Image (cartoon, rainbow, N blue to C red; front, top):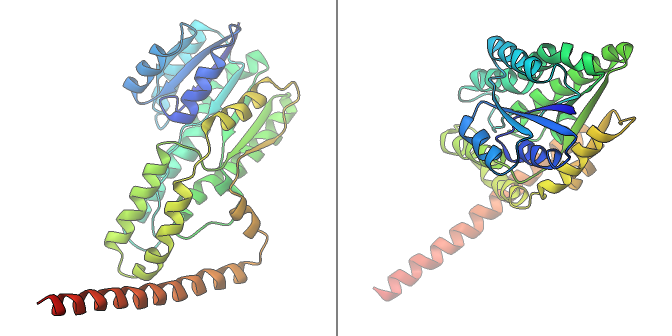
Length: 298
């Protein structure tokens, strides 16, 4: 029997990976998350080879308890998939940005570091592999108001590369997954964060007003999670896995990434300035027409 630990399992993407892997009778999956009810729901729609494990990846004590539990049940881990994470959008100079970034680093980066360190003896015992979820935001140039999330994923990229080169000496594979936009709860987190900035900003009303339709369009067309599940399964089953797997990265963000930074900066500014003037112009015309109509009806 092979054993996997998948974090963030109460969420859509990680939960889908659990559902797929447990179809293989040779695997038992420890499905870990802080949300106990989500884990119970996952267990009900899967089978007896899924073992719910309540885990707070921000707590050393919780991780140690999880390792003890897995050690008693399995004695090894053939793979750990670090998929737990959170996302929000925020200004870097307004609001509680320090606490926002601290929380995201605590979960997205330090949580991954903590889990991998805790389970490493079990991975080593099996000659297993470590799979870390990064993001397309980990290699693309950060977009406005998405920098807090990008900061955490840039850190995941550096951490995963360093871990891979270190564990290479022990013949343990470390794999990085870079998903694009998928249908998950993170979309709601991003949209909620954007709306909070729009409602509280002192500086960015024109910017946020112009960019909001672009963000809404991107969030409205996520990819089906089956594509990411296929990618993760490749990373789990491959005899000689690649160091990095991309999955449905956003084509237009990838297309502008090679453009020089100053050109991109100019483009954003020109887009916002022109767009906001047009919105004001057509908005005033529309409002003026409505006012004239009301006068005529009066």
